[in-house]
Image (cartoon, rainbow, N blue to C red; front, top):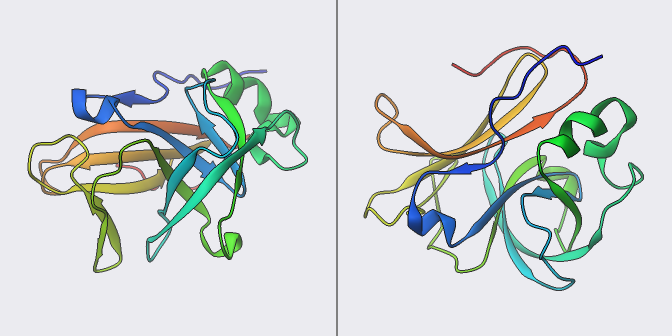
Length: 172
């Protein structure tokens, strides 16, 4: 039984950000609103747990089961697939267990930097650093890229991962 509602899936609020495909990763499984990625496409993975990390990887096969894709576990599959995501396996993430939850960029990459443990890049082309992050909702994880300083930040992209169980809310 569906007990929650998802108002939006991945959204990009700027033209430049739309030129790069954005998604999220849990383990070795990428969720992205594109069914056109092909084996070997290059991606940048930004680990957004404490102490952000950046690495390069490639797209593998489409994920069709929960064997390698936690988002497709029986208690999560219906909501995560109804959000418009296509799921792919990711290859080449070194020490994958240390990355945890991640945001993925496909296509032309802006310069990424890590400052004081947080990843930044100018995703929307406004000349300012945009921040990568994640927080917990009551039943899932909200991934986001925000623009502006923390007190006036505007989300320019967000993605949602339904976990299938109650979690402690850390999102504002």
